[in-house]
Length: 228
Image (cartoon, rainbow, N blue to C red; front, top):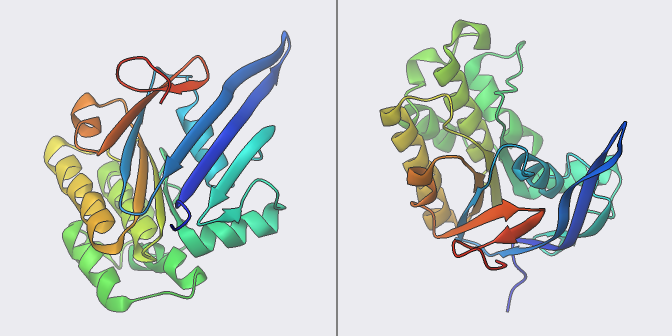
């Protein structure tokens, strides 16, 4: 039996406030295997973005286990977490986070180049599927918000990651574009065995994923309210 792509165990995290520590995650357990898709729902402030940032190694958890492709994420320093992220993870942020000094085509290829896995054919296919082929020579500031979001999705998929973490990836897209981007992400999980964990407020998008869990009171619950 192979290790899950993502394993979280007893994950706890909070933030300091003038009134004391504000708990956000209070013992989250989660396991996601290759090819699985999960929608992470919950009210604003429930901790969805926090959970994704911890899983990506962008923040350090207070306590708990974070493993990606069987490798310890939580116990690594910044450089170690960055190396593990480059090797295995694609991230789509709420904000586009495109590199303003790189043209669109180079932005899409950026993560794959860092990981040493650039595939020009796959990058070109992504650009075409995302409707960005005519825009590859433009600068990010010359794109609309929706176009920038599609470029960010392409960048995350270009390295064919084992784990795709997406934080409201279609929030800035119209319905038709959102459906196309969602279909592309789901296709990657089917063809490449990639696991997808997506935070979303959309019940319609959540329903398209194989599993659904809600963050409530710092814990993951299934659709019935029971612990996930």
